[in-house]
Length: 341
Image (cartoon, rainbow, N blue to C red; front, top):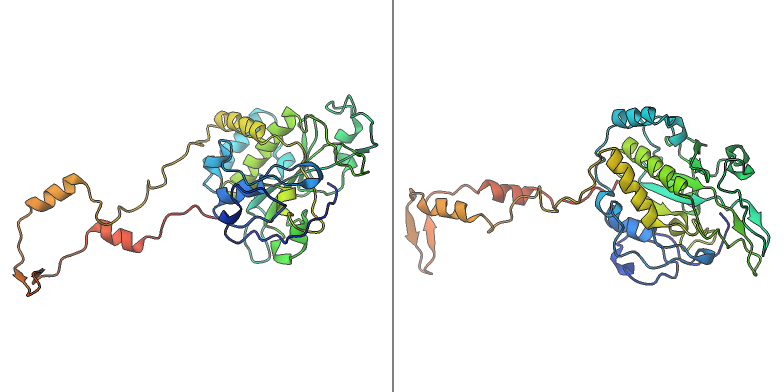
């Protein structure tokens, strides 16, 4: 979690389309739907924190679920954790507790992924052969201060440093404005770094993170989202801080597709529906699109009102016709959009 310098200010709350599919010189993300924001906030993070382009789409199930209601209750999640002997206290706190809010009582929206960047190894050395084993000293959570709400070590265990109901600023973006604190939940994955020829700790292990870390990260994400009630917007620390002078380069070598695969397996185990739902399922039928059957029935109805023809050739009736239910609904119901929570 080291510092690198960029120049453009972050603005999460403006239209996103301008940067879609474009190479990113570490421009900040702009707002849109939760899914659109995630496509930008999960841009690939390269060496020195150089960000790749906004993703055209996210790997399933992320593309289908972000910003939507979580189809799992806290009671069901607690039963799963008990069955697998997992302490919910290690996942950010009680699954029945609320999540953090900012000073305007807006609950957290984002799930930020960091890496610890610890320890820093000297240039041309080797990453520890035992770093993915419990005996490696840096897998001990006691070594780390409060860098994030939850820390996940390389054997897939996690520890809560601050419960998810605690407002905690772990990104430069949050630290710049008080009302941003509380909108971000943070998880840091233990990862050593090595100095390169510039002297910066820019080199990460080739594998990045272990399968066990991806599994635990998926579980922590689900637990946090259950507490929210909606799927949080996942984000990389480097993308949240894009353009800021104290931006970081984390996480390095994060395999989003692999994390999505582990998410799929876990959501299947938990019987969470992650299938895409048709966009127009609950919308009122637009005017002029009534079914053939309805049109046929209307033609068969006897006309009870008298009609007269105007000089222009238009026909008018003496009685007022009542708008159809579909028309009423269409005029009163706003366009359905995913809640940006």
